[in-house]
Amino acid sequence: HSYESIKNDSNFMKDSFDYFLVGSDQVWNPKLSTEHMLRVYLLDFIHDSKKISYASSISENIPYNLRDLYKNALSEFKHISVREEGSAKEIEKILGYKPVVNIDPTLLIDVHYWQEIAKKPDENIDKPYIFVYDLYRSNEILEVVEKVAKHQNIKYVNFTPISFFKKLRYRHLQYNYYTNGPSEFLWLIKESDFVITSSFHGVLFSLIFSKPFYAILWNVPDKMRQNDRIIDILEKVGLRDRCFTDPEKILERWLDCKIDWESVHEKLEELRRKSSNWLLEALRK
Image (cartoon, rainbow, N blue to C red; front, top):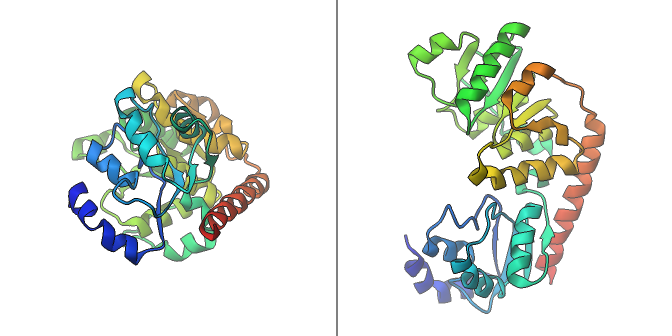
């Protein structure tokens, strides 16, 4: 329930476990956590144990007043990897060396695992449809998606809750999946014909399920570092042109499905191999 309660149990945990591993989704972002929360995610509650970071993400500049906290905590890690180049550069400022960059854990598992988890929603979903996962900039994205759907005579499903009056505005929206679980979420991506998203994991599952997509980036200065994780993975698989800041750009390209998926998955498999080997080697050591 608190940093202090975890710290009080640290001796018990140290005796109970061989490794302590932290990783992934912005766990070290100084803007998303209190100092006590950061201490937990930096595994500062336990000492003299095997601590490993797998693909941890910062996604922001580390403020000067927290540098000692990061430095003291991270200096005790046996092995550190981060999720994007921006996070690696921030750690380099603190520790004096650049850690390894590994892929997000969702990409460590191949498509067959996710297919087994995917589950059709109870509602009937008409195909074809566009899958929209708009965690940010929803109004701008939906305005464009509605135009695309009308132009290409296709329906879409959408994450953001839509009121009745907005439903009248978005005539081609056939289904809102805000209250569905992760299994239905995966099914809706898997069965879609195109994905439009402002979410990093929306991009990752598009890659996993081989779905043509567009990724909409942040357009405000204090959020620009949030774009690093999307840009970084797309550059590594050769799809940098699939992300852009202005949703209106979709109206120039419409639903462009031309993606060399064989090349993309070859690159992903190589990234998966390197990242898996790094983690296994960290555990062996």
